[in-house]
Length: 219
Image 1 (cartoon, rainbow, N blue to C red):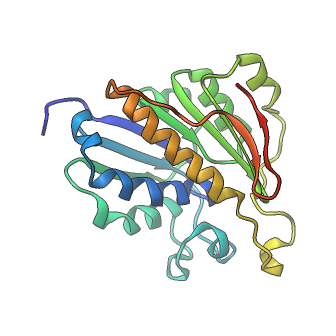
Image 2 (tube, rainbow, N blue to C red; image 1 turned 135 degrees about the vertical axis):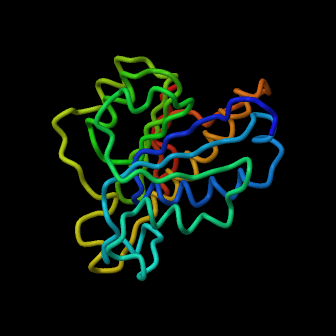
Image 3 (cartoon, rainbow, N blue to C red; image 1 turned 45 degrees about the horizontal axis):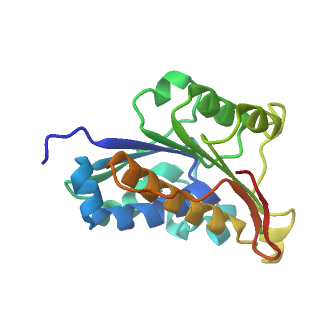
């Protein structure tokens, strides 16, 4: 080991966005020189939910994981990618306190929870907020004006699925959650480059539709 403190990343939510983000991020980090130069990367994913049959079509969980905590299933599926430099830890709980995020360098909110978003925004530091509905996704991050972030975060909003009503039953799945997950992976890699002192170009905060393209850039 290099003796450097490992970079710590928190992914909040192991649903359509979070689970797919982690499944792409862990393998991408496991074999490269970037994390070695940083002293390693510890990824923690938080979610209290369990895998249900309704999650199979779009969240990537195997049918054999139904009934298990999502973070445990996700952690188990990534075991072979972990090594001295990269680790994944699942925590079976929701984000309820700003103190929970105290030691993290990067925080990615992937759950449709206004309280989790507000805790992350108010905590400061380097954060990314990913949201999805149907084929569209929204990405906000710490570069944005605080007033804009507040205006786009309704504290009274009820949690919802990334799929439109009836999509799971009909099999007409929308894949905006995969676009959001890809944005998140790109953001993390670029932010890690910045932490390593290299030139970095994180993807800009954006609203994007897979059907209609970029709808709005916030910067």
